[in-house]
Amino acid sequence: MSQATVLLADDDAGIRLIASQTLIAEGYAVRSTTNPTALMRWVRNGDGDLLITDVYMGDECIFDIMPEIRAERPELPIIVISGQSTLMTAMSATEHGAFDYLPKPFDIDELAQMTKRALQSREGQKKLDRPVRVSDPRLTEAVIGRSAAMQEVFRTMSRVKNTALTILIEGESGTGKETIARAIHDLGNRETKPFVPVNMAAVERDRIEAELFGVVGSDGQVIPGKVAQSDGGTLFLDEVGDMPLDAQTQLLRFLQNGEFSPVGSNKVDVSTTRVIAATSRDLRSLIEEGSFRNDLFYRLNVVTIAIPPLRARKDDIPELAKRFLKRAEMDGLGQKTIDAKALKRLSLHDWPGNVRELQNVVMRMIALSSEPIISEDLVQASLVSERRLPKENGASFEQKLRDLLREHVEPDLRAFSEGEGTIYHDVVSMVERPLIELALNVTGGNKVRAAQLLGMNRNTLRSKINTLEIASPE
Picture (cartoon, helix red, strand yellow):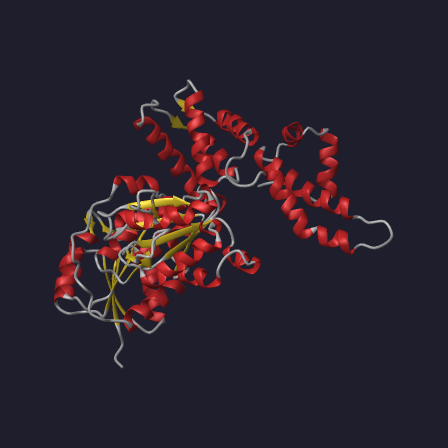
């Protein structure tokens, strides 16, 4: 077999160098350019077996010339690489017929593997049935994330948006599961059809079947359910793990053949709605408990999208905070900015309530501050206030701690038989170390300020730092 040639188009000399070296080491010939005109000349001449291209070369956007590339060489696979790692970049790459999308900075092994897959699957690329839409402002506002954790989410979304595949979105409360589901719907070929959300945890358990599949009313007429209302569109089932078993059976039947019957009716109806389900619970554990059907899980879990918690994508916090400020300005709450120290303080927080908690904190600061610039002190005060609020969504910190103790400590308590135990002191020391480390991180290593925050004597704190061998933060 002859040596495959890769066309590489990028105006970043460093990217060209490392990509070329990687591909040459893998046994490919490489022709690189920074010029879109030269690239198009190669394409028209039939040169190259694969194109790897950046989105922007100077002022030229590759998406502007990709229709011409597709027309000239429909069989040429294209890998798009970009430092502009947004949802719309991933979506545009897919809609223009790219084989795959790789955000910068990328792993060279991943580039090599993707190149191999692209060359192995050189099949005719289908031309688009409809024009690519420009960036939808609702979605660029709603789905934000340049972190590596969110890039995989975007890539999966771009691949499934035009399919009828059932999707299961997993993630903690407040991570934005419904936002992701809406984006998949709005960017896909069902965008003109209804998007109907149903929160299983908010519907009375004995009403769920009627809510989903409809019910025969007192007058003998069928009151349509959410499945019928979303026909041809998307039915979003939030917290699907809270469904009772009877409703799970009906949902399984619908997913298998698209058929359902309203409660109280023998009539069989059909719907072409696509189902996207979401859960903040571990469905596998619910299966073991017997409260969730194993066969339904596999019907829902055709494609899984795991939304990372905000603490795992802290690089996205500044952009999210600024977007919430912009949204507040558009809603008439006034124009405010946030300084660099305040953004850094936001990024130090672990955000147990995820994106929803961040939005609440930002909105509270906007409402309570008369100053045009949000400061670090205001952020600190708002985070303290947030901890004192009742937790409406998800378990409280105390409940989460109780669950952890039940899981990790209760077995030791039950197994202990005689003598004097050390479990109390062991648990306290396990909590003490991360608590002191957290206080030192918040204060930038200032032990006096950390002691004040913890309500400890500074000498006691110094003693514990030495005893526990806690290093000062860099």
